[in-house]
Length: 610
Image (cartoon, rainbow, N blue to C red):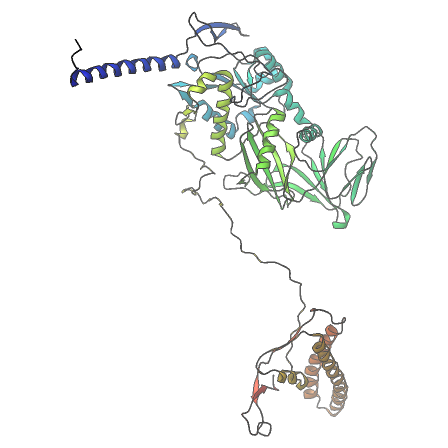
């Protein structure tokens, strides 16, 4: 017999049981994804002080565990793999051991001189980096390398770390750092071998040209190689290749900042010395130094001085996909360093073009420096790279520090804990960062420069845009002469106009020639009158009453001098085009006499008294 139909209540109970079973299966599935089925076996690593550092190395379990990835230098990454700094020296973490953050935070070593390691930008970035956590576990911890240890201890006694921030500055033992990286095999952010390339400006320019990065036109003088140098007032020629002045002279060493600019004698000559900022100065002009240092036996690069409209651009890159640009006043302008209220050099964030972003990507990949800086010169609608630096931070940008910490986190986790990065692609920073000084209390004493709102407790604000209303400046300077006259011959020219009160402008060649004839006639008459007046003055002086005659003679002489000047201007060269103009403007009038205005209304005319 057919089964009895199920009631409505029975259908609901069955559906509820199926839903509970489905939820349980989904929960078990996601739990299996959250906890990889691998075992952690402690692997002892030799430590210089007889202690042991246990690093968890995943091994295959008896069940179907995922395969373990061992990544070596030169291994080809998939298209979805984030950027990892590549090194040719073998110090780039050649064997990636995946481990879990729950086993402890990743140890990031800071191997740099104390002045750089304790600088405000470095501490701000490290504070943000160590603030990241996941499921209550901190992701990173900082292992500082004391300067005394760097300088005086063998690399076997240096602290151990899993990731290494190491970069050169004055006094830094770069070769010891390279030996340490080869010994411990940490993940290195900035390749230590490629940092040696940054010491030689010739090598920098060669590598930039190889990858298609524009550089200024330049010549190389290698000291001691017998190069033929011909230096003249307006150019320098090295082995037959000529470079016009003004030009820039750079020492070959990237650490030598005694850079000089030489100007041609046709423009006044002299030279300007550029140097690292000393107080409020970054350059100094020497008007009596005209010759370069080409004959002192050292090596130099000579490059053209590009016209940059008084600014140069500093670019800070973090990986190939991130670049921050700032503009500052060029030290070539006047050598005066403009600073903000916090004493930092005044700079303005700017938007990089697509070509400049591509230049940044090429530099990061070519020199294998995850975080680096370089100098751009914008000239003639193009951008040129004139210098590449190592590890560089923006001095005064909270946004840059935050972005840098996020990117460094991603690169480090991808190399050491990629499965953790897949689970937590976005960092979860603690607020405030755990290693921020207690007196800070999480407050930000320095307002973010990228904020669109001016800080309430300071007088500073951020320039967002400039709106300019301009007009062309194609105006030729003019020499003007103004004089008052009552000469009837000049006043009669106004009667040709329908309105005698309107001013008269004389521009046409024929009218100018007629005016010249009138002025010349007036000058002749005034000269004859002067001679008569001088005789009259002498006669009055002999009679003892020369005062009134002398005063009138002085007034006539003043008017004559002005008329002579006008005549000289009119006769200076032939009339062609519009290069001279005369304006006659009436300033006083008197009615026509009755005998001149019979039968019609009297017309005003310029007063003979003005």
